[in-house]
Length: 370
Image 1 (cartoon, one colour):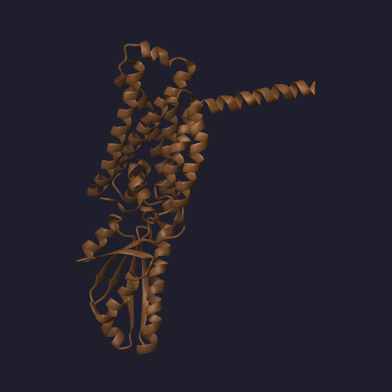
Image 2: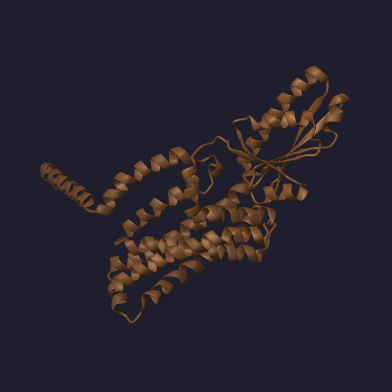
């Protein structure tokens, strides 16, 4: 009796292994996906902050100020240095996230050192990325303190590093994480709704009815796009209200720009979901496809590790990731009131991603219909 039961179980196990192995998609996901993700994760996930781009205003332009700045330039933690013409240029570089940190040296820097009086160097960090801001500010303070120790020993003066965190003055981690979670949950909701839509039709056998119906491929695509887009929009707006009302995260930007940004971002994710759904035959394959896209997309969005710290080829790969731009928009509009010009800069790649993925999904539908 037990032997017969074990024989049946063994036969079923053997059958499952054969079924999985004979399916090229499952075989690719089982073998190639873990290896690919291992390579991506090993390079993309890091708690180390390096390649810090910096904007500088040196009002003193003295030997002492240049000596201090040379220490930053020779530090392995810092990469590019932009010398701003004025405060407006200084602010713009931080606003647009072209740099992670700013240094401001006042006109009396060298004269106070020579007079053996205390002087200050202002460090401005982008508080929207709380972890990176804290670490980068610590690196800058360490360099200034090292220079201060040398100056104190020789000239008796003292230099103090004054750190200012823009857009998140107290580096409230909740501000950062909640604005990012809105984008993450929107991704999960939208991908699942769209990726399962066509696969569910195929599994239930109703996709054949769509094929023989008078609907064109464009009409099917539109019908599959609009419902998940509306549902995801409503849920994202509800989540945003919860973040603002219950968690007291300040909303500094334009509501209209935020809503349009959500729509464009979700449209690009809908395109990815529909493309996944169009090439999958079962809901199980669609879910595996969602996982295959979702994990690398989150890790390559800058959520865990700054994009600037990733290898160059991964930095270019992030340009194909809609979540990267969605996160920049949610954080930027939420915490600093990102302006129209900066918002449009992030809309353009999202619109391109949406156009390409929706076109690919439409082309796949058309092939099935033909």
